[in-house]
Amino acid sequence: MRPELLKGHLDALLLAALEDEPRHGYAVIETLRTGSDGTLDLPTGTVYPALHRLERAGLIASRWHTVGGRRRRDYQLTAAGHAALAQHRDTWDRFSAAVTALLGRPVTPPTG
Amino acid sequence: MRPELLKGHLDALLLAALEDEPRHGYAVIETLRTGSDGTLDLPTGTVYPALHRLERAGLIASRWHTVGGRRRRDYQLTAAGHAALAQHRDTWDRFSAAVTALLGRPVTPPTG
DNA sequence: CTCCATATGTAGGCTCACAAAGTATTGTGA
DNA sequence: TCACAATACTTTGTGAGCCTACATATGGAG
Image 1 (cartoon, rainbow over the protein chains, first blue to last red):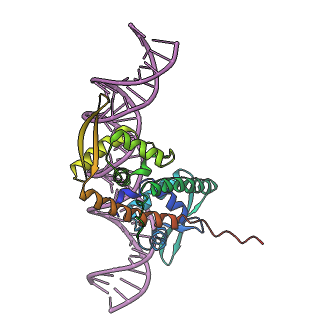
Image 2: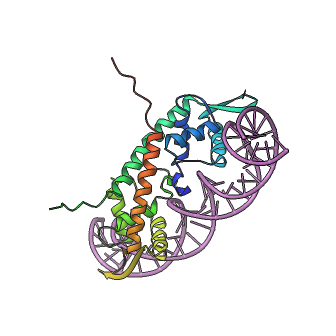
């Protein structure tokens, strides 16, 4: 999967991964990987800076925890984050509908 | 529509726009705009360089024509272009399925 | 004691679509 | 005649954004 494909859609995926319950960065990566059947396996260098950016933007909030001797930073959606996610879903729906329509298979010649 | 959304998907759209019949750059832009109900209105500075790149890559071939006093460059898919388009469709299917699944609406609580 | 999974982080670079500007012709409306 | 829109193509520079590579630290398995 070429990396550029993700451009512009990362925020939507991160927000969606945090919608159900608060998660830490590593768990977000897992959630996206398993939730996409392995298709999307995002590197930490992509996810962590993006989470920081989303927090600076006020769309998510973080709290530090220590679980089993390991430091974790749990993120959860803010109200603004929920709103942004809804917006991203709209945008994705329109974008994917447009691309799917344009990539639409050529008419299958009727057999017989 | 944020520009970055398109990243990585442009080639697929251009190849698809040329699949049915040869078209010149301006017509490709029209095809994509109308075929997406106006959602995708690509600037010339995006499309023309991309067509040049696809030609250099051997995925499309061009021929100059003069129609009504105006110079046109008609592009058509090569065999490699058809193959690349098929590949792009596979990739899009997997990518869009993954994103759609991950953005999947939270379960709507059964009403009543 | 080594290796892997877990867990977080930064710096630097590269790709790629876009904005902006320019060239040229035809058609149209005032 | 003049101005302007639509058609048609091109190039330069730039900025956004994700990735590669690297660094750090703990816990458990062998």
